[in-house]
Image 1 (cartoon, one colour):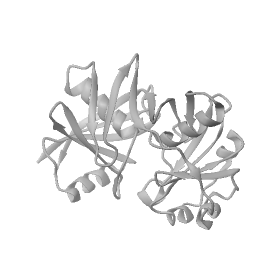
Image 2 (cartoon, rainbow, N blue to C red):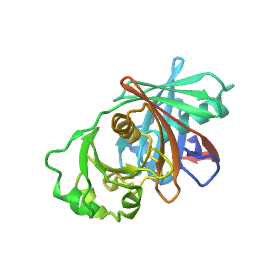
Image 3 (cartoon, rainbow, N blue to C red):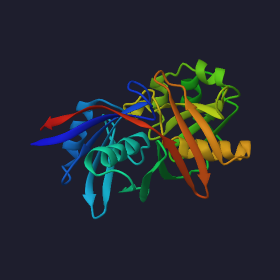
Length: 262
């Protein structure tokens, strides 16, 4: 059996930046074991699988070790493949998801705009000791939402200086960890760690900005924000808070296309 596979660098304007995702269009769903094996073979932070569903698509995301409930960069990569390689382009694309309803991606100039749910982080009264030990540097505050701890630091320099203990952070499962601070050349910066999902440090995390954008919009008193993720590859995300939704904007670049033999 052959299935197509595309590798796309999301939240990037040229190859080898942003966050690489694998995208596998399917005619019908494979069993979960085979989906996971394909994701493990890709060995990227996320592999997206989608199946046509009327005038939309059913979409799922897998890390090398498990399925996840929401992924931004692999959604962007999937929309890129559909709009540029599988259809005539233009318009928008709608994805039906198992946990977060319908996600829409549309062209916005030379960017792709993704309509995602917004999650307002709430204060974490008693942070787990594994979180504090895993980060090493005590944050100003810790909030949580959507199974993610958000550790807020005073400056970009502190965010850059964190050297996480991934063994400690892996104990927080199913929670991942986002760290953030005010940016020098952006409204805010962040990093994201999810070692229990097979992702020690994610290059650019769209889903984390569903939490970060509402937090910083409230703190800065503005609805439109420029964000940077400070991974080794780096990435830029434009965020806009619109009611209970977050619009995340970025670009994408195709780096590989081929077929799996399974």
